Amino acid sequence: TELQISGQLGSQTDQLRLGKVLGARFILRVEFNRMMDTEVLYPKVVDTETGERIVVKQIDLTPKTEGRALVDELARGIWTAVEKNYPIRGILKEENGQSSINVGTSEGVKAGTRFAVALKPDQTPLPDRFIVVEDPIGPNSAAVRLENLTLESIPKEGMFVSQVPVQERPQ
Image 1 (tube, rainbow, N blue to C red):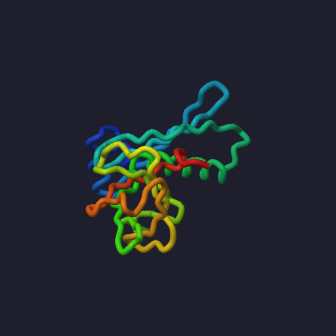
Image 2 (cartoon, helix red, strand yellow; image 1 turned 45 degrees about the horizontal axis):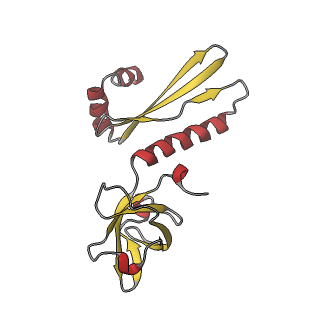
Image 3 (cartoon, rainbow, N blue to C red; image 1 turned 90 degrees about the vertical axis):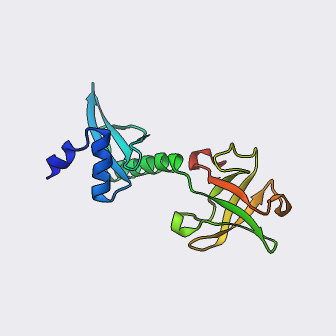
């Protein structure tokens, strides 16, 4: 069965079909290659809804590479790549003198998550305008702190927000 499944990962059409059968959003493939004295791990993530390949950083292995450290690095690389390609998106609103977004813990929002702000969906974010999630965070909403925005600057229909990938956040 493993060989049958592995054989079905060759074409994009097969990957999309397999993802539907398994109920999976992503398929993860990992290849090991040896180049001179170095072994290299090539993780590959495929979106089973679109067939899009998500680039994940390769990992160089040495005889001293520890298993747990390898798993941690692999998980971090995959999560970073997926987060960058699929940011959490929502709408910023002002209600009763408070600012909040319409996404919460059910979408993976945590305290400290940073979002860029735009006037329209898929529009380039406004320069130097951000929001940062603060407690309380519910399943479908979260309180936010405004950065270089005021409550008065939020239009009645709201503003569109998109999660800033971790590597792009200021330290």
